[in-house]
Length: 459
Ligand SMILES: [Zn+2]
Image (cartoon, rainbow, N blue to C red; front, side, top):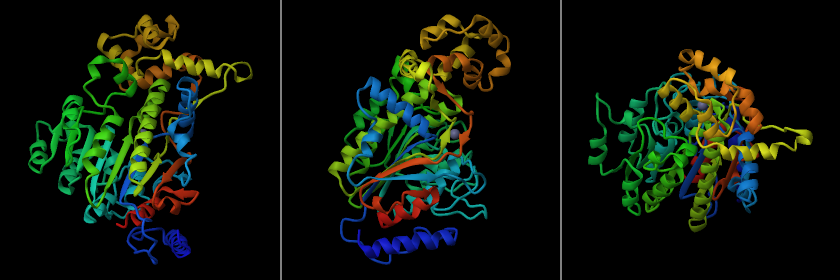
């Protein structure tokens, strides 16, 4: 990077922080033109939603022990040219952000209130990054294991006063021409009240509803609407263990398909890929589910790096929006020597607490033998009887109720502990590589990233 560009970047950051960033980021042209090859034609933005550092470490040590290598995230940090930053995540309304405010900070460059999508506390709508990218001729895509109308993908595209307006978000995806949309949330596209899918089809979108039809489309370019569940996609842990879920593509498969659909565009693409259910497993306090969500996300880093190696004009950002649940692999046993074995016991778990709770709801009680079969964990009969006696009151949040009721048994078996069912204020990891990455400072507030991405992309 030239000294002039470094200076201009520094002044830009300084000025912007003094001015509170309102309306500034991404709207001023660079003062100096960086040398050719310094701009990114493409951007891949990988989000491990709700990933505290403890979750990353849990997955890393599991991977070392059971796959014999470091996580791809850790290997990425050893690549020449990678930038690593610690990121502050506060929103305008709280030191603890939600995904709407955090995603919007990246999407529009301002701190906004929890719950809002690219609408600031004054009620002003701010232009999302994908709208800017479309104006520059780039194609855009969102892939998520959540409903695709959920806060994090919406934050790169939409303007709504509240994240719950997911029907409106689906309509804005259509109007704003997001080229690839893949994930869950079919109910916000097709319901008794309306059906947006014919409108997508008439605009040239290929429509996909199963892994099978996605495979048939694979290799083709152009717009795609892939909706694989009414609600969020099932957890990776459940997809791996329940044959009835084999028709649902995983995050990696959707990511690879999205790359194929988008990468033929001459002016490049911007693609957000969200492992949205790391957050959900954190809310529930489900150690096995969070591990397998994180491992699935990590495989996407390898896919992204392979693409970047073939397309060095691609900026890759790997990060998270906040921590959730305070997940940690705790030291246990004499001299903490029990933690490795506890980690191994996660391998006996073949169903998420969400799937177990669904079965409990279906049959009307928790079955101790069945629980042991799918988790390897013994529960005291007296506690199970007490849980079953209060089942009706617990069914509002059944997976969380299971986690709370049997917290001692789950933690004794797996050594995975939690601070709450909520988001946390912790600073989070960010890694970036490719054109524009070296403009990212070692400490960054989430809203400061937007301007750096826009400048890297020349949008
Ligand atoms: Zn959350």
